[in-house]
Image (cartoon, rainbow, N blue to C red; front, side, top):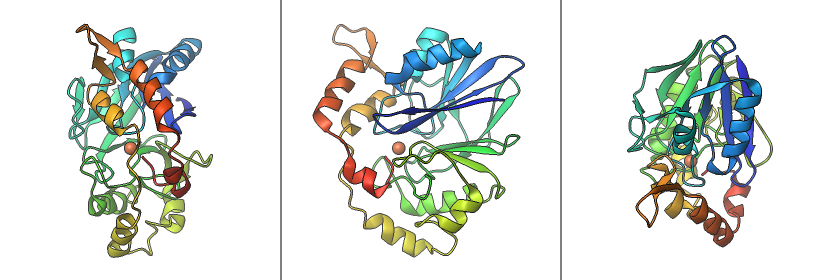
Length: 264
Ligand SMILES: [Fe+2]
């Protein structure tokens, strides 16, 4: 399998490219609008044809490129069945497998950060793409988009920690340069969710975070509910690049969240 981990340095978002060597079909997990040219160039250089873009959830901190990639390359858009992406081609229920050539991704519903979060498991390669459900030594916040700390605790303990210990976990973000972890590592070292923590302790941690809201949430969430495509004043459809640029200008950085490693 061809595998690349890419980063959007503005939002600290990881995008993952998985490609099948035999069929040259590829999937992008969590593509970022501002990085669409980079990602299209890489697909071309590697001789890959984008089959689909998959969202781990409706993001609050950046806008997805999935809608634009569909327009440009004909790639399908997939998101969790409960994510609320109205123009997705695939509403992916728990247990469904997405096949990209010989690459198979199983969908695990892992709600809690948002109600619609999913994890994509590539069982053969021993890799799982956890979105914001599980970060390296952290987890996503649970105080908006129907977040639920109790649900996140269950998702991590009963779904992610149920995977083989050697499974590599690839998060949607990292704010300190870490790129990957494993089930065994997080069971031991995740400060919020290691096996010694009780549900009550986890709920107390999450309730006590008191994070400021992500400054892009008002722009990003509505855009991502339509795969990053927003209606222009003229009635046409255009990428949300201009509002995004404005939002970046106005928001500053979310350093309070970054320092806490809270995930957004
Ligand atoms: Fe998120």
